[in-house]
Image (cartoon, rainbow, N blue to C red; front, side, top):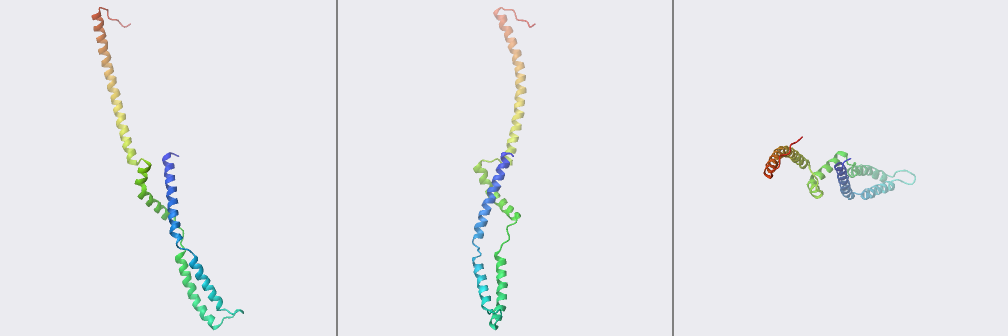
Amino acid sequence: MGPLELFAILVLAGAIIVLLYYYLQETKGTSLVGVRSSISQVGSKVSEGIHPNNTQTPEGEKKMSGMSEKVSEMSEMLKGKVNVPISTDSLSGRIDEFLDEQSDRLIKDWELATKSDVSTLEKKYNKVSRDIDDLERRFNEYRGHANKKFEHIEERLSKLEGKEPEEDE
C-alpha cells in the first residue's frame, strides 16, 4: 500500500468520524424522555379504567375507547421519532460532499499533489529527458570535433618547438 492510498484511507476515516460526530449531535436533541412520559401517562389512564377484579366500569369503557385513539396517536409519534439508521449511500454522499468542500483546503494545508500536478510534472520530465538526450548527442559531436582540433594544434605546436610529430602505432 503506497503512501497515497494510506493517506486516502486516513482522510476517509477522518471524514467518517466527523460525519458520525455531527450525526450524533443532530440526533442528541430528539430523546425518548418525552415519549416515555407519554407512554406512562397512557398506562396510568388505562389502569384507572379497570376495577381490581378485572371488570371495566362504564367510565373505563369510555376511557378505553379514547385510549385506543391515544395509543394510535402515540404510535404515529413514535414512528416519526424513531429514525432508521443512515444508509451507506447517504453516508457516502455526505463524505463526498465533505471532501468536495474541504479538498482545496486539504490539498493546500498538506501540500498534496493533484492529478493535474502529476501530469504537468510528467510532461516536464519527458521534455527534460529529450533535452538531455539532445545535449548528450551534441556534446559527443562537439567532443569529436574538439579532439580533432586539439590533435591538429598539438601537431602545429610540436612543429613550432622543433620536434617531430609523434606517430601512433
